[in-house]
Length: 364
Image 1: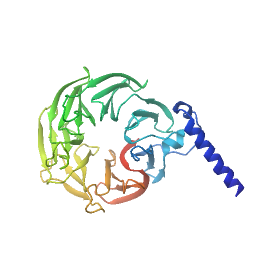
Image 2: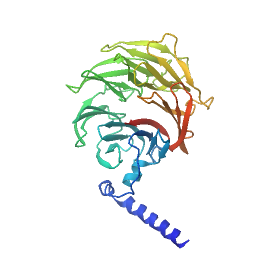
Image 3: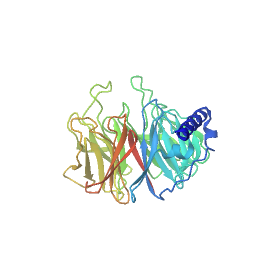
Image 4: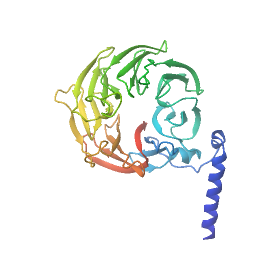
C-alpha cells in the first residue's frame, strides 16, 4: 500500500511539473522505450473542442496491436486542441492541430518531437511542394500560409478572401496538385474549388461546384472528384441537394456525376491506391467506380439507424491492401472505435481509440 501511495504521489508531482514547463523543455523528457512496429496506421483523435485532449493512436495491422496516446507517451506533451489532419514526408510526420493553431513535427518511427510550426490561425491541412516549401490551409485566416517545413518558418501568405460581407469566404480545406496547380476546396458557406499557381503563389482561377464541397480526391486519370454536402436547411447560406462532381484534368468546369436525395449529407470522400474506386460516408459506407454508370454500391451498413452521422465519423482506404478503416466517434465523450474491413466490406478487426477519431495516416 505504501509503495502504491508513493507511486501515485510521484505521478502527481510529475504532472504538476509538466504543467508548468514550456513546450521546449518538455521535448527533453525521456520515456521508456517501446517495441514499435516499423509500419502502421495513425488514428487522429480530434478530442473535444476547447478541452485540449486530442491524441494519436497507433495500430499495427499485422499483429493488431494498439498503442494509445503515442505522442504524449513519447514526449510528455499533450497534442493540443482538436487534431484535424496528418501527413508524412520522408521520415517526419506533421500533425495539424486546428484550434491550437500549430503543426507538430515528429519522427514517424519513434514519435519523438522534432519541431513545430506556429503562428497559424486555424490550420486544416498541409501540402508539400518541396523539401523547403509547403502550403497550409486555414478555416478562418482567409489566406493560405506558405511555410518552410524544415525550419518551421512562415515564409508568405496567399490571400484568398473575396471580401464577401455576408459570408466570410473563402475558408480553405484539402489540397491536391496537378502539375504546377494546387486545388483547394472551400467548404464553409461556399461552393468553390480554388486553383493556385504554386510557382506564383497566387489564386489564378476557380471552379464552381455544389454548395459546401467537404472533401475531394484525384483519380488515376488526374480527374478531380469533389463531394458536396449541399449545406444544412437552417444555414444562412441556404441548402441544396448534395452531389458528387468531377472536374477533368486541367479543366475549370465541374460535371455532376451523382445527385443525392434531399436531406442527405455525404462526407469524407476517399479513393483506393489504384485510383479507380471512390468511397464515402452517407450514413453507411458506399463505393463508386470512377467509370461506373450504375451509381454507388452499399458496402458497409451502419449499426446506428436514424442518426445523421450514423456513428461513422471518419473513413480511409489502405492504398496498398485496399482495406477499409471506418472511425466511429460514438457519443464524442467516451473513447471512440475503429472498424477494419476487407475490400469487400467483411469485418476483420475492431479496436478502441482516443476521443472522436476523425482521420487516419498510413505509415509505411
